[in-house]
Image 1 (cartoon, rainbow, N blue to C red):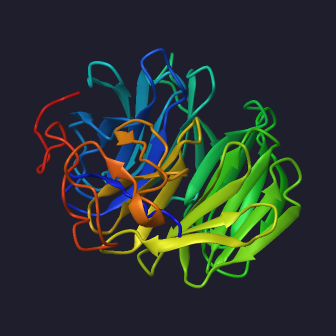
Image 2: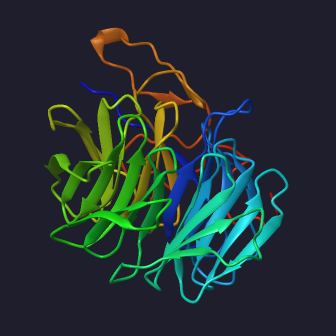
Image 3: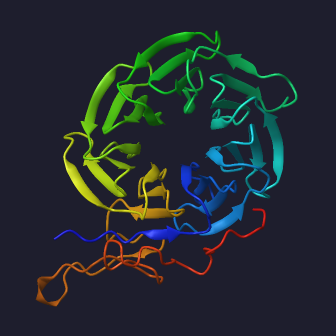
Amino acid sequence: MAMRQTPLTCSGHTRPVVDLAFSGITPYGYFLISACKDGKPMLRQGDTGDWIGTFLGHKGAVWGATLNKDATKAATAAADFTAKVWDGVSGDELITLAHKHIVKSVDFTQDSNYLLTGGQDKLLRIYDLSKPEAEPQVVSGHTSGIKKALWSSDDTQILSADDKTVRLWDRNTLTEIKAINVAMSVSSMEYVPEGELIVITYGRTIAFHSAETLEQIKSFEAPATINSASLHPEKECLVAGGEDFKLYKYDYNTGEELESYKGHFGPIHCVRFSPDGELYASGSEDGTLRLWQTTVGKTYGLWKCVIPEEEGGEVAKAKGNLPGTTEEDLEDLGSENSDSIYSTAPEVKA
């Protein structure tokens, strides 16, 4: 029998969690940022979910959030017609970038010198963060609001998705290289630099395309509408979540469903693997983030390994070393992992 998943629950947000992102691995571990309709993006330790701080300053729902590689900077996209750049260590607001409509997506270049934004006004903008008062470079061509915009191919190209179109742009000429249409509204897009892949979700479809040509490589169909999917760094498996409150795990090579379980009390809006592939995070309409082990029962973060065999040959369940681990799929999912994760959003900067 397979061990049961024992998620770590991260509370603190008061509205649906709509986006999340991990930093790279730093000397201090890795970090996780969450975007929420409560307008208060939060920074957490990535492997434990422990709250570090809340970025205060937006006056509307935050739709997108990201960290640079070393987690020294954060960026957020919001309904108050701004994108903001923050100091990831002090929590201070560094730059506010005014837009003409709701901003949905933010992404740093690898050197953290430029920020790409996209949103409801159908335009991509590239800001030079060393000259934030200067006008950004603007790329037009989308015919509906932009849902996601990402740097690709060592920041020489840009990938962007609107309602039913994914486009590839040349960074230097700001011209479109290629566009593809999909059958239903795009719900998410993830860029995987190792192997230059993109993961796109629309309807029940999880599709993998080349980031360099947009040619489709493969696709899987899930049992329910999917809002987000993420590919494991080693490309062994992928996870996806959506409207039926469930998380699904698939074998990337065969498409076989490996696991599915009730993950939240509401639709799942975002899922992402950690940079080391040891866990994945999910964010939901229920206002929580949850961290899940890629290999159940392994000692990692707050999870402690279990003895494989108990008396009678029963496989032991994985257990966390702090209160709040689940016995049943949903009964206790609302409980906390540790005292350092607050039940209400602390009004303190990072």
